[in-house]
Each structure stands twice: as structure tokens, then as C-alpha cells.
Image (cartoon, rainbow, N blue to C red; front, side, top):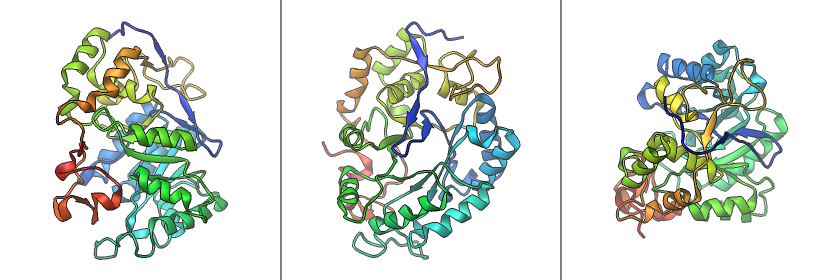
Amino acid sequence: MLTPKIGTKPIPVLKLNNGGSMPAVGVGCWMGRQGEGDHVTNMVKTALRLGYRHIDTAANYCDEISVGQAIHESGVPRQELFVTTKLASEDHWDPQRALETSLKKLGLDYVDLYLLHWPMALRVDGSALQPNESPTFIETWHLMQELLRTGKTKAIGVSNLSLELLTSLLAHPNTTVVPAVDQVEAHPCLPQHELLDFCRSKGIQVVAYSPVGKHKFASDKDIQTMAQRLNITPAQVILSWGVQRGTAIVPKSEHEERLIENITVSPAKLVLYFGRCAEPSSLFSQIVELPSHDMETLDKLHLKPGMHRSVCGFHSAELGGSCFGWTYKQLGWGFGLGGVMRD
């Protein structure tokens, strides 16, 4: 059993700008081609049994039915859960219909958070509308604002919006709702410092997907040294950094031992405390509070040669570097080919 050598603290509950609360650690449900059926159902049921109460899915994950099945079979009361799903790019024309479809698949009356998954709309043939073609992501956002009146989502937010695109959204005169969340790739190799600072100033919560990233930086010498000194795993170092800097994190894994690792530094402490425990005997799950010098080291990890990069697989070499039909420039991203940042 790993016993951390420094202080620990309960995983926080984050307040959103709509007045609601979101657990700082969730479970991401993207599983690629395995996104339907027993894989996701079993993963979510295991996560809920271990104490996760924040579930992150999407229409494009093709697993909302499986996620909903897991929620209902778990026996966890709906009011104890925070459920996020996302608007598919093919549905930018009609977010209300898309949300109703997602709710039907999930078997829920409402979700806690509904996100614009990507800024680009896609035609039926899969080709992307360009930024000046209607519906623009800003026009779609204005349609999403109306969803709050229906009660079918408690909050709305965005995903994969760069600082440039988020700024343009907020500046539009018809934007009456500030996104509750911007969910983006964020980890020590892509810390998103400038975006995080901007979101803090606007009351927008940053949620980090792929928060542990790939082995490229999990095996970094500095992270390995921290893990050994603190007697925790490299993944726990990285996740603790993510929570301590104020982001919510949604790591994913179908393996129970990794799900445990993602929410606790001690295998004896399995249940996250989000207002109440699942059972009276449950212990509070805790994360490591990293010393300031370790936080500073991780904040600067991306400055090492070749380390400032995306670790996700959605990058294309087309158009000199693109993602789902938009160039990096159109997305407001500073990447070069392969998702390596042009510093």
C-alpha cells in the first residue's frame, strides 16, 4: 500500500457560475470503437461503486445508452450524480432535438452540463462547415442558451474552444450566457496557462480531458522523482497537479485498479466525498497536496525540448495541420504538424 509522505486533502467540489456544484474528479467515458455495450457499462458501474459521482460522456462517444444503463443499475440516486454529455457537430442546427435524443438514450430527465463538443459543424457527409458558414459555433451557442429554460440541462458550456474562439464568443452581443465550463486537453505537456487564467477571470471552469496524457511525460525523470519521493504513482502526481491548479479532471480507464488510482493516493480510501458518503463506513478519498516547488516544476514541464504538445489522436497533416476540417489557425491553436506546439 502506498502511504503518501506529505499532507493530503479532500478532493474539492467546484462551484460553477450557474450556482451548481461539480466534483473535481470525474470519469471520462470515451472508449473509441469499444464505446458501446458491456465495456462502458461495466466501467461506469465500477466507477460508481468506487465512489465516482461525475460522469462525462458525449453523443459522439456512441455510449450514452450504456452509460445510462450503468447509472440505473448502480442504484446511486440521481441527485448524487453530476452527468455531462455533449452536442455532436452533426447536430449544431438543432441542439434542443439533440439534447432530447441524448436524454432518451441516457434514460434521464436532465443532465447537469451540456457542452458544445467542437466549434465546427459537420454536414451529413462528414465535411466541416468553415468558420464563416452558418451555423457558426457562436450561432449554435445562442441556440444552446435557450436550453436552460427547458430544465433539461442545468448548465451549458463549451469544449475545445481556444482562448481566441472563447474571446470571440463572449464578445458577441447576443451572448447572454457565459459558458459554465470549457473542457480542453490539459496536462503538464499542454498546461493551457493563458486559457486557464482567462477562464478564471470570466468565471469559467476549465475541465481537463486526457489529464494524464501518454507515457511520454508520465515517465519524465522529474515526475518519476516526485512520485518516488512522495511515495505515490506518477499518475497521481499529475492528477494532483491538475486538481491543485483549479481544473476539474476527467481521466478514463476500464481497469478497476486504475480507476482507484485516479481518485485516491491510498487504496484504503476509495470513496470520493461530494457532500455525503455512499455508505456510513466509507472513508473520505484524498489527493496529494503537492509542495509549491513541485507545482512550479510541473507548471514548467512543457518548456523542455519537444514536450510542449498535444497527446491526442485527432490531429491531421492535411491543410498544414488540422482537426476535423479546420486548420490549427482557424481553431486558434498554436500547433505545428503532429500537435507539437510552435514555441
